[in-house]
Length: 596
Image (cartoon, rainbow, N blue to C red; front, side, top):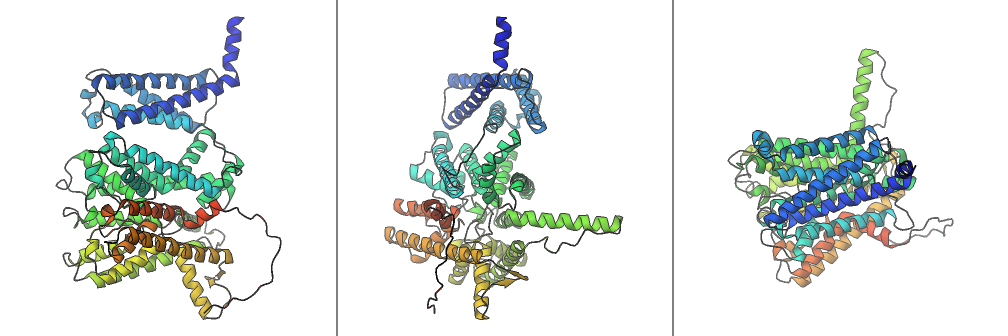
């Protein structure tokens, strides 16, 4: 009787809740211990103790998962079962390679040492348990804008702490420089105060890589989707919260859009890393592991428009300056990342519609019902504006720099470098030429390209292509005497127009204040260089004339705030700070204001 009573108590729901919480806390402790292990230097005896802890934690974790399967009869989704199978297989593999001499018998497994497999198992275990935690974002505590800003702040602070770990750098780093680097990585800017490749260790560079990836997509995207992946459900409030973040048209499409965003990101980054790897010569990077990390780092940095590079002078290094294949691959990555996920998804929808239509027409001689707006207005405006900016920028750069920075290249190299240099100011941040050697006219053109930046809901910054398009259309509309903006037989809403001009005004205000403060703190710097730095920081570009590392501490703080405001946008900050009016059930009499 006592045994049956104990067994029934074990099977009750409260014990299952305790088991879930315990397993999650254990996985969290394991990750924190792994960070301690990776971030600090240890004696051999301490390393052995840490090794035993990892194995003990994984054994308990595997037992906790098995209890949920067999004792509590929890029915997990197929995706979760596959994930658990991978974790179990990796754990079994770890037990096998723990036997001395086994790893040496399989040379292909020596690419990574034993500890890498152990860290990987700990990470998978943590993701598995973390994703089962239920997130409920309640509007009475944080509105979407506040949650968005808070998530970025937390990532930046966490990144700062990780970069200050002893093993993240070769010689240590100050708090301000760590904060600057973390902010630049999370805000996918690329401005640096210390050289990424020589100053940070492999561990430190991996932290920057993760910060770029999380900052480019947003922590809410990862946390929410993986939570949904494991649990298969979420609250209505969560879906409302994420609807704005993913720019979904319908609440029911939120997680479908999240899945597509993550799928597109990882596929593009994988293909980018693959092509970058084979574009490199052995004389440039001899070791396979180094070439692999270089490829992954630059693929993520490119697609996320981060602009970080492990090379001291970015792609302007002598060994990489004439590798035009590499330049084209990275340019395609940051153009795809900067065009915006809604645009990519809309183009995918159109291609799917066109292929299905063609297939039905050939097979059944009956096409799909005509759908005139598969490619929506937003996509048409963004694609056209992007094409114009790239074309004008390439031609302008080619003309202005033909006998200057392009003189060392052949005819093909001139075209590729001009195209790359016209695309990178739109928040990418890589450079294949010497920025400080550019003509004044070229710098002025780059100011405009940096300010405009990428497209909405992308990994890039700036005021966005759609904003400048709406402003330009408004100019022509006013000149022609129209009281509304019409394009592609559609009328742009007044809310979009108001938002566009608010973003333009606020951006100029923030950039102006940034220039004024830096000019006050660093009076020895030229106004042109300061302005370039401020525009680059606000638009999360990352290009510099070379003054970033020489700025005073006060100016670095100004740049940190400028990067952060540029990433989250000043309008979002105002929405987060001011109480939002829910209803306007009245209207005042309309009056005209004298303008011009």
